Length: 136
Image 1 (tube, helix red, strand yellow):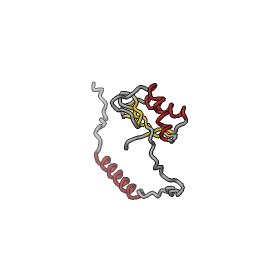
Image 2 (tube, helix red, strand yellow):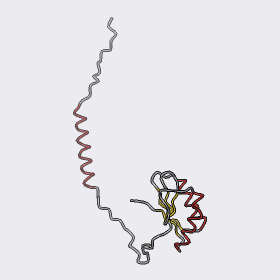
Image 3 (cartoon, one colour):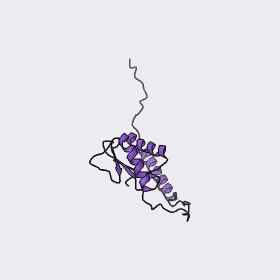
């Protein structure tokens, strides 16, 4: 007694329909790339004559070293950096000597954010404008 099914279904897929599909997708993407406009106009603001670049240098500067220690410039010694508590009065004297209410902050790339934020907080507490130095 043979109980196997009589109708055999082929599991193989035809490649002709796959070729047609790839060809249609190719035509679709070629047409879409030709219709795309790569020259989109952008309305940029015109430069204002009232805005002038700041050219006066900031003389008082705090440099933050790789090991999160501080050097106050001008006159600081890069060989002997100090802790944060030691630079508070020295920084205030340097800002007063410069005659500007600005403090330039420069830091090593590996310096922690806390070290930079300490100097920013000192600047804010004394009413100085912080200027962050960065390298492009």
